[in-house]
Length: 431
Image 1: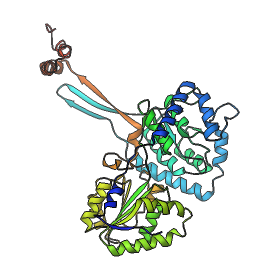
Image 2: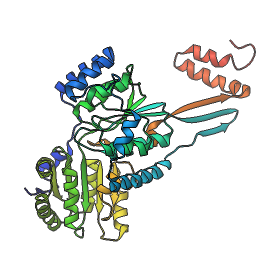
Image 3: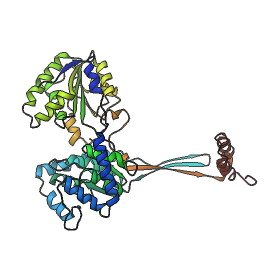
Image 4: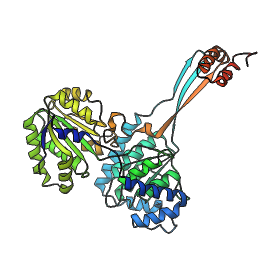
């Protein structure tokens, strides 16, 4: 298998740009039934779905919460190398996210004091994929910002928590762990059961069933986003190393058969060299079947007229991850190109910044908008776990001075009661 090479005007480019986060109607219907059932029957329904979908039975206490002693015992089996890596990653993620803490705002103007008070959510739920997979990085990327934000209680649900996932939960400050997954876990977090507390917000990635459940419970709780397949766009010039670009494309493609991995370059020579490298490296990849399918269906090296066209296409794509590999070791050209990319979840500037570093260690969040949502959405951050409340104070003099203006606007909108509310505060004799 080799990466297909096309020009920027090839009709297949439009197909690559046209992604959709629409869900399968059959899955939506099935998930709606599960959500309604959990809402109605609580823990009984949760137990039935856990047995059916996860082959999991409740513990001795009748629930699915992992007791602290078992949690610690499992977490302690992590290898020293992985443990050390998790500690470093947690520290870096925490340091960067502490910069995102917003202060309260106050404005005093003519007897009116306006404020914006920022407070943390009381309780959040983290969905972490589990089973045969291990995603400790997802725990760090969701739980650490929640803790930095000051969230009162952090609850994690995951089907079959691995030792690495539990160690990450310890380091990140997770309070409680429930070994549950799927739509029933999302519904339990959204509406609460006798054993599983209701949360204010649910964050974290999952499969189509989890995404559908998050979509359905939104409104009862807040959610971070509906995550789609992972994606990377690499903008590169002729001096970029083909082997590195090929490795970065494959790193994205091995996630999922629906993953998208695209190279944008004005160099046909580079495109051909990258395609050859992809074929060579693919043969040694353990998840070669997945990566090959993803590249065949959703990958390409697109030869552009120049870097300007590559940047324009990159902004149209609005990718989750964008790498800018131009200018060799000189970061100046890469920074200049990156400054012109306005729709991306994360931008990796220069050849030394790999998307894999962002996934695990750099410190910026790896929970990013997908499916073109980078046009309007942002990476997960501390701000996602905090809410803002306006405060308004008036002096008597300011209330009197503003009353005629308020009355005029209220009369304009046909809301005379609003005008009277202001007029009564403007002085004696007003009614």
